[in-house]
Length: 227
Length: 78
Image (cartoon, rainbow over all chains, first blue to last red; front, top):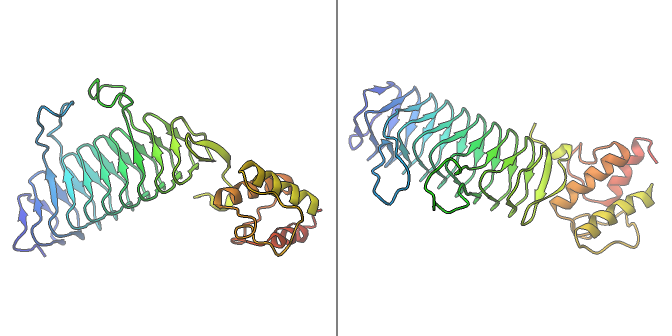
């Protein structure tokens, strides 16, 4: 059912869809079957850049939302976003342009995702975490609450040039509460970043790192592996 | 074997700036009495696995020093 107070500009919505009060679905949006859209959601929003922004803004590209997804209240999804089936986007999540999100993904409340981000199937990102621009997150990754990431060691001095790169987080990685991932680092498959760690260089596969700066503590024991 | 277990426990405790144990008390809790956190337990598990090729957490979480010894003994290891 589509609420009377919702504004739907798209004509590419499946019939089995639920849109609650005061949500706005723009014309660049395609939504599959059995999708729930909560209250006060905006989907397909185009960025409105000003001179304060240091990079070119993409205003092209549709938003695809696969079947059986749920988009909770107050979510804002910009343009050129693909969200595959069975994924849940929690309350107050904001996702900027050029983002792909896999199947069975959970993006929990208040997570912010910047542009040019890929998130693999079955990954879970918990409340209040920030995914910086140009980040790649693999499959079956767990990112705990309050994890922060950065992509620019020069704090925007040279604009959004090619050196601005977020972390690459490979499959089956776990990241503990409040960890900080610094720009352009890779976290190897199956590794664990302990709570509060500050990761400033690449992490090998299947190890636990902790501390500031993060150092390898041990390899991941069998009982802690994600697969 | 108990001396080896004590040695491994003390390596982990010392490395992480925690107080070493004098005696191996089988009733001692790894967390509450020895002060191990989840990182220490992960390291302990890996070191025991390296020594005895056994995963002490394979059937679930254990907490007592005696449970480690029991698991190793059950496998007929010394």
